Image 1 (cartoon, rainbow over the protein chains, first blue to last red):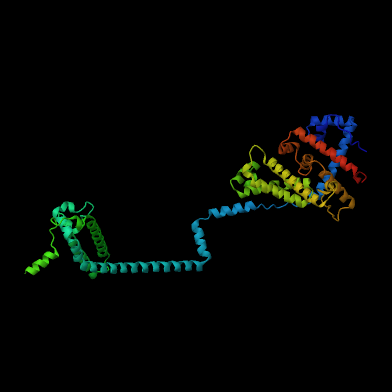
Image 2 (image 1 turned 30 degrees about the horizontal axis):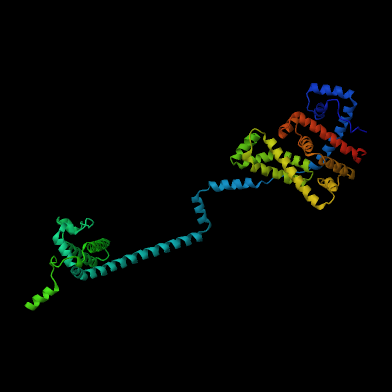
Length: 264
Length: 192
């Protein structure tokens, strides 16, 4: 019926397609219609295209147009809306929500907090009491032991202090004790130690009287620290007995004492 | 509110993470994209999946969208690519079951005929041949036929979407119609 192998040789290819789909202006339409009446090939082709198009339209109407418009579910849109909602919520609302959803959990957390605070409070009290007791014990020991300590370091300490009191103590030695501030002149080590031990005795007496006062405990600690420092400094400054000549050593000796007793 | 905006404005809104904006784009174009996919693939389920994948791909690549092209062109290009991917997948699936390649090429894109009681056997056969003829067209010709007949787009719109000269669109459509005519006139439809 139709010559399928025949190409459109008229040069009206584009005009035919435009006319076929009714996308031409009036002038082009008139031109093509005039050509169509004179060209049998174009007429045949136009009839063939109409047949193809009717088949396509039938297929479209029968199968595609009956299909319902699909509802597309795009998961990202949901996730975005969810994230936007979650971002708009503040941390406080989340915190409140946590408690509002689970009151049992909230009460449990509060109870645990109270127990923890109680344990910490008891622990702090017990450590304070034990510290005070330790300080009392140490002070009482020092009150008894301070003279013996003085005796052990008596001779070299005295010699150094007597010989050159300013140079006997290093610059690092703390000079700002309460008793020293009253007396502008620097005291010898032994006197200092006695002064400090007196303050310790006083402090220990105070702690015995008012063991729960925190100020007295602090004073006791400070004085203990000072005592430790002074002893350490003395140990560093006191020369060995072997380094002092016998002529220079003017301290009282046991042999001399025994001789005096024998002579008496 | 979003219904008055252009496609390009909607895309800008969607980029700024307004979920309703992209929903409006989907609403506007879902039918046409589905028609294109149906025309290209000839199977309802595959067309539905391809259309959905098109919108998902569009959403994922929203930030890569350049304002110099139309949203419709962009969506159509994604849809055509999606259909080609679906066809390649279907072909590879089919080839794994069929030994004869020629037999496979004939059967790959033929949708099962919908046996509707209202239709006659002759009509079913005719529709089957039309589908077969369209599916046998090259992709570049097929997409233009589908855009013209299923989406009812103008030549200018097709030209914009495919980024082709207007004359190329018309010549391709002419070639497509001519090939379809040849295929359909070989079938018993002519007798009917």
